[in-house]
Length: 144
Image (cartoon, rainbow, N blue to C red; front, top):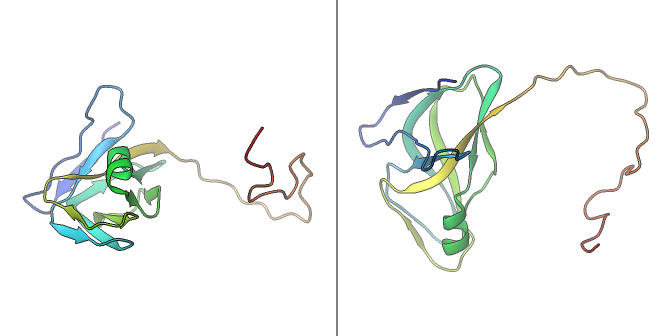
């Protein structure tokens, strides 16, 4: 599969897979920004993408940023639809108690290309029962 990428900023870094077989390709910042504790910011990548119909690009956190600095992608996973042609921007959130500096050229997220199906919606009067029923929000408990 081919993904077309347009640089709209000369400092933009084309995403790449760090290792053969990785699911996610690294996404980089083109700006320097401080994220204060409990603050969310929008980070520019300087890139536009052309995702084929039938696919989406999911934007997910980097595990190292999450574990070591408390930085995560706020709307995980963020979805870039096939029809979107604007700049990819990443919403980062600082869950820690310390400022975090996003530097130009640093990894801020990872992107995964995923196949999607368009559902056929059918309105009905009733839906069938299941063993779970309407149980949710922790209804199965936390231990075995």
